[in-house]
Amino acid sequence: MTIATDFRFDESALREFRTVFSGPIIRPGDATYEEQRRVWNGSIDRHPAVIARCAGVADVVAALRYARGAGLIAAVRSGGHSFPGQSVCDGGIVIDLGLMKGIRVDPMGRTARAQAGVLLGELDRETQAFGLAVPAGIVTHTGLAGLTLGGGVGWLMRKYGLTIDQLLSVDLVTADGEFVKASEDENADLFWGVRGGGGNFGIVTEFEFRLNQVGPTVLAGPIMWPIEKASEVLRFYRDWIEEAPDELTTIVVNRKAPPLPAIPQHLHGKRVVIVACCYSGSIEDGERAIAPLRKFGTPVLDLCAPKPFVAHQAMFDPSFAHGLWYYFRSCDVDRLSDEVIDITVDHCMRIESPMSGCPIFHLGGQVARVGENETAYSGRGAGHTFNINGITTDAEGFDEERTWARRLWAALEPHHTSVYVNFLMDEGEQRIRQAYGPKKFDRLRELKNKYDPANFFRLNQNISPA
Ligand SMILES: Cc1cc2nc3c(=O)[nH]c(=O)nc-3n(C[C@H](O)[C@H](O)[C@H](O)COP(=O)(O)OP(=O)(O)OC[C@H]3O[C@@H](n4cnc5c(N)ncnc54)[C@H](O)[C@@H]3O)c2cc1C
Image (cartoon, rainbow, N blue to C red; front, top):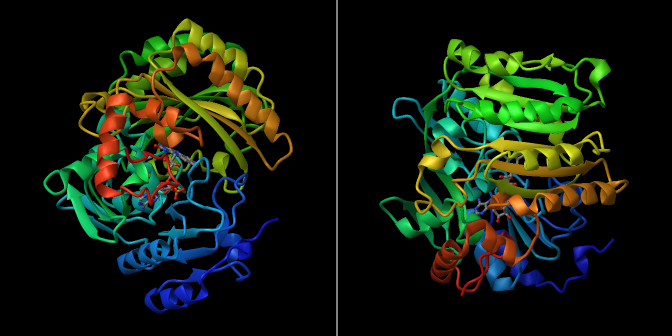
């Protein structure tokens, strides 16, 4: 194991940094170093020289200035859920915003402010106290910051759009250490860029969102059939969602049924096709909308029922636990054509790991109504987002799962349209370009030239300056 103490390190600069930084500064050898250098994806094993856990905006500015002065490469970490582990580095500094947990909900004005260290479940808890919500992702322990900066797809998107579609403003520290605000009226170019352009332009310290009415009880949950029925189920599903109201967002998951208390034991480990539903309108309307799906074939399990939105939000949490080894391949497709379905089913019949799977998000609705050029996020016209994941407990069997994920992704290649930037691994500039499309990528590059010409923020899905 290489430890960051090998790095030639300016101790005097660090001493000075300690005098202006109020949060914990963690170095190799410190009691919490091992825990703090870890990120969600257990296959990532990096050793930063310094982990600066910011207590507030002043710390973010101080950490950034210190990193620049000391010539350290910087990783910016909020929730630590980057698939390829871009929020931790070898030898540099991790500017960690995970302690910045402030949330303020204004139920009358229907807005919320959330600091960068907030996780999705923490924001939902505060907003749902008033029956309000920001559309975000599907796992409660995901970081709000990284998710928002890439776009944000989730259970409410067909009704209320992507997370960025409800974003009103951000507070951001630029590569020069300058504090700026960005909104439609202030630094509008930057506001366009942070809505999909990731962490390329600065460190966001706080987000302001518009809130929408949701639940707090929603009709939601999974309906499950054996994988042998997947071909028929997916063909039915494809036609059924053509007419789906915006309130209904569904995610198809092909995997082995997990050994969870809600799932009968005889199904554990059996390959299944799941349609997970979330209806964000009235329960009665939801029952009507979901009825045809419930009646199709003979589901082996139907857990779609009225429940608190926050409970539904946590449904996938156990499937994506911290510290497992994860590998992802993603792509968008226009529609679930017969060929796309056949490829998917064929490969999912061969899933070996009890944890691997293939979630397929249904987009459309409000996501597609926002103009493609209104934000940096790309691929609003896509019908579905594939998020193929190969998962193991540790290194054992990981290569095989990675191969499985790659093969399914490659078989779908003729049908790829775009790719969601937050679902990329470290796949190189070509794929980032593909994620944004050439025109948008060039526009993002111009913005990068303006806000970060030295590419200080480069541990990300990088838009290198022109
Ligand atoms: C279990 C799981 C479930 C997911 N589900 C969804 C989902 O439903 N919908 C969806 O859209 N995405 C989902 N994602 C993908 C997710 O959006 C990205 O992984 C996102 O980067 C996570 O944000 P984070 O703050 O946790 O990440 P981090 O690892 O902390 O950061 C990722 C990157 O974002 C940038 N960044 C982070 N914080 C800041 C900041 N404050 N300022 C500037 N840049 C910053 C940095 O470049 C950093 O490298 C999921 C990921 C996981 C692991």
